[in-house]
Amino acid sequence: MVFDPAYIAAIIIYLSALIGTVGNLVILFAFISNAIRHKVLQPLDKIIINMALVNLLLCCYKEIPGLLFFTNTKIFGEQACRVLLYTYHMLRLISIWSVENLSFLHLIKIQRPNHRWSKFIYRHQGQYVNSILVGCWIFSILFHIPYLQYDEEMEKNNNRTIIYLGATSCTSSTGKFLTKFTTYSSVSLDLIVIILVIILNGFIIDLLCKHRRKVRAISTADSGWNKHTAQATKILLSLLSIYVVCWISSDMVWIAIVSGLIESNFEHSILNSYYGLLSSIYYSASSYVVVFGYRKVREYLNEACWCLKCKKSMVVQTVE
Image (cartoon, rainbow, N blue to C red; front, side, top):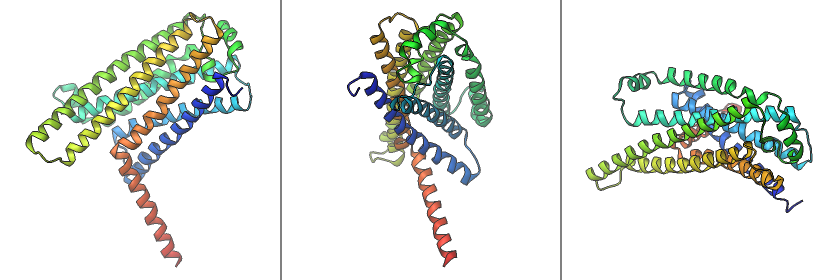
């Protein structure tokens, strides 16, 4: 049992998801506590909170089947598989769209808008973010409804792979046209958004590098802004590499699974394991890049800790 590849993959997925849960909780605590203190929530912070919340739910989604697997609990039947598939892909699309909108707003913030539409978005960021978030949730909820339909082929495949983690073993070939259409449409949409994220972050990195060269030309000494731009560039490059590798790889594995080209049970289980590993690594790694690389997170955490210390000292003084 110890040397079973599925068991080893389950341990890695569970631990990675657990680490990602802590990272996303830190992000949520930092931004929500800052919003409560200042009684205002900035548009960019809304998207980051939405992204961290969705990633947190996806990490929990990975942990629960892992716990059930370790305790040899098998409750994932055909109906549960449909709900798992629906929930996972709905949250995943929202997570990807959050990254794309965050990149877009960062680009507008760095490069002052010249066009009429970009000026309008820049001046009405709050309304834009609210409408985008609501629209993204509604679209993702409705778009993935075909996954909730009954599928005999999926049930047949799940009966032979249900021993593994519920989330990934439910990802199998399907006979329903609507489910296939939703799957391929979802993958195509993922790839389009990934390309958009790469293009937007490419523009951002190019602007930051140009600004850094200008600062160096004006002053030979390293300035605070120059350090911040260098740090921002590193964060964007790190996130971009994680997005590209994990998203594209998991999409390709997803297509290989649902297409039904893989008939061997062993190869099918290997692909399922690989798919689960890629997604869990993304949700944990991206959270810690934000925690350790994003300056606002550290500032918000320092403010929150300082406020807690002040409250404790005030309580001690009143008791004395």
